[in-house]
Length: 273
Image (cartoon, rainbow, N blue to C red; front, side):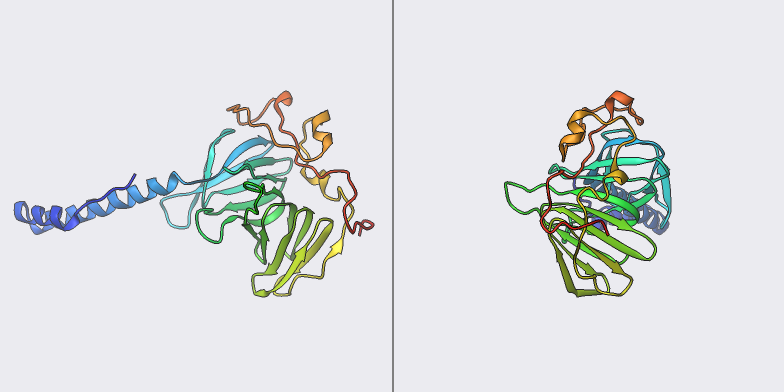
């Protein structure tokens, strides 16, 4: 919805009919109206949708007071917007979905900020702390460029499955499928490209470490649902349940399927570091 108002015309009419004070009031009202319309329009641009939630999870949304966040109530299938902050506590887990079918698992004790995917470069979210597994789908068989940021790192992806682990000291990136390019925010000219079975580590202002190998399944336990595993979840990468259940906490028989890595041998796989 686009709101167009001829401010000069309306308020010049007000100056003719009323006092100068009334004209100033008119301008203030129109300004507030325009800001509200712009805000309403931006709120229609959802960046993600909640596919499942379990355990203790908090979602905070920017309020009208600048720099303030307000905790909101939510349900499965609710849309999330740029600026929303997700915080999972111990035992908490949230699965997000994008319009193109891409998904992300937000593991326990993690904080991420949802970003505006309508802007370029298309950044999904900023992982401020904790553990996130991301599955980016290809579109029409072609690469689907996205970015994931952390306080120290830019991760450029096209169609892949990878993990991001963030602490106060560093960011670690593990690639299970596809290919990602990793750079330090402070030194974007230095890139490290990771293939399946490779990982890197980025510290503060240092460039990414040279790629090294990791054992398949290395991080799977960090992203598993607390609900009992079923046969379909054991077969590898799965798409989470999108049944439309509106309950905030799902019943045991409604738990989503994990996004897990296949048991097949990864190229360049080595021993567990």
